Length: 420
Image 1: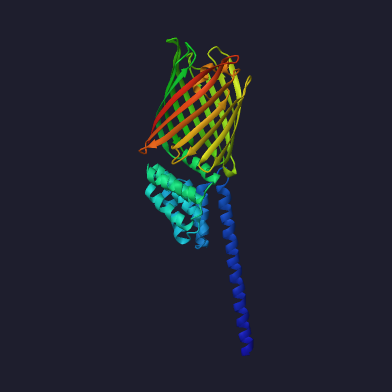
Image 2 (image 1 turned 90 degrees about the horizontal axis):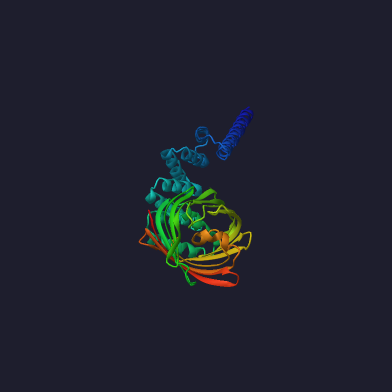
């Protein structure tokens, strides 16, 4: 009798165990499914952040130790612009399980957006300690020092990341992307003097003032230029040009360039329009495809197709661009060596033919495309006292002005910008 009673109790306990185990499994399946629904909706074209928050709160209630729901809550609160709640859940995830690298990244990005640079820096250092081989956190550290105008530490950690990842082309490309999406405003002035060794021709003067507004979505540049061209001490052409440029970042892997310029004066074309599509690839490669359209003051016009390819090699950047034109093609090979920050570099440029992007010679673009030219430029750019960017560029352009006859055109350009 006793054995029978003991057997019944054993069976009852076993059934309770099975029932409990099935309940746990069902709960695990339900919470996993719920998390999948939340993540799928976040990736949709029209995510419902409020509904996702309700779903994630339910999931957290069902499985309090399931940290993924807390991360989902932080992300949805963040995207719904409820920053305090987002910050709470990001920090909760980091405290609960610091192996969630995304929580660090989201929190850093949110603090950068809110200009909480000290907090962002603290989180970044903590992330670097946990993930010493993660490039993203080291890049964020550089971005923060750049935003704080701390050029000493910015240069220090630029050197550090290049030493840790030597000859890594992805690093330089990511640095370019990082700097291009940093919130910066700049005002600048530019002056170019062109001397020509042919009697009675020149000099030419080109001056411009511009303002650049740069944000995470891209940048917008407004520019006003003034040109005056002399011949035998007489003004042959002068006037103003108004221009707008923009770089638009659609996705991480590609961006767009748009340029529109207008003038009613003979020193410039009437219209100069440009568009390029840039695509980034792995290993520091970049390619671009675009079109240029120039309408001269006499209503003649030219359309040009451009193709380009670029490559980062450690601290070097190389770019070859060709313009396919009606008469003669044009080629430009640009090289840069970044010796400190984005604003500190040495450049050497070599080219053949007349480029539609050459603002100095744009007024004669239609006449020059059928003629040969060979040019070489050397330039130096430097960031001074965190806010000022100074640069100069010297160009020797050997220009054919009639069949087999050449003139030497020397450009002396100087640039000064103030960033804030």
